[in-house]
Image (tube, rainbow, N blue to C red; front, side, top):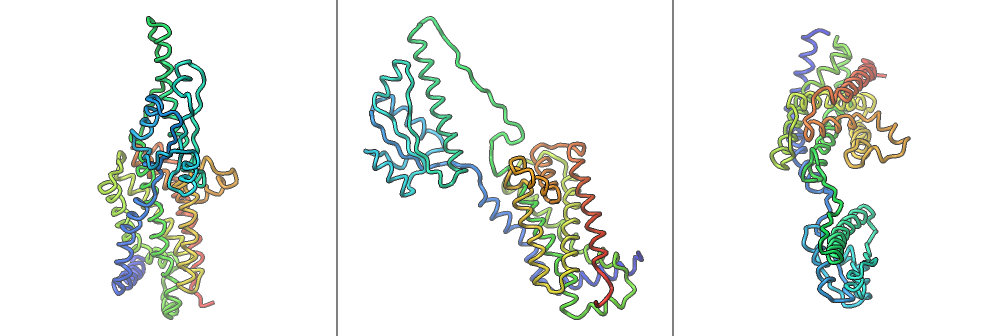
Length: 377
């Protein structure tokens, strides 16, 4: 590679970017917009779930159980039904997500120490929400049941002071169990994938559409010099976008950052180089900007969103899909981001992911260089 020819391609691409300031502003503003939309729009926490109750006894004990549901941030009481039909209508209309029915003789059964069933009717049209709501309800009822059982044993043997079995959880890395801390680092990977391919998917296709490819072919530059020279300016822009995304995650969304800044930007540089090369490869194959932009987004956005572990755990996917995720570069970048942000792990813990990104960069780089041919055919 001759440095002077390489710099000539770099200057050409910088001039091209400078002549289109609106596209540059879009590229710089897009990370802010995507981070805001996905950071606020994607939330796996289910709080303030609308609750309906039907108390068939109306005692102090039954009222105490209902207060346990509304004394936390998970449930909001919206309907205290007077009949079972009214409760069902509340759920059918979408006014309530869960309905709790306290049976008659509730207090009597509690005092006798026998089994007591509390009915919970859940709107399971959204199965993920239903599973979370059922878990919340079971936890509240189990806690209340344990306290009642302990009180019963104390009344049966006044000198006995039994201790109930308890689980003492210790949450690491995401102490407050905020889904935002889990989602936002993955959003950075999604934004970088979209931005990277969008930046370079039009480079060669633009040359064909504007009729300047003949001039480029007539020059003595090599395919490697064209690839490197065209990607360097967009790499700089992409790293600026990565810094913007990281700053928004830490200072706006208050995601804890416990790792190394050097490791964060090193991994971002590797991943950005991969997606830039993917965009260039698509641009070299496609002859129109429209086809190149659409195909590049199809190659990066959907796989990065669905198969990277950003939205859905890879361990819960079918075996065949888990195998496919191994050829998705965003999978490794998402794992690195979550480790760097939340765990603060060192290079030894993410070395395999870094090596995978480096291998992707090498393979896609070779393919992109070979795909660009200095010929009009």
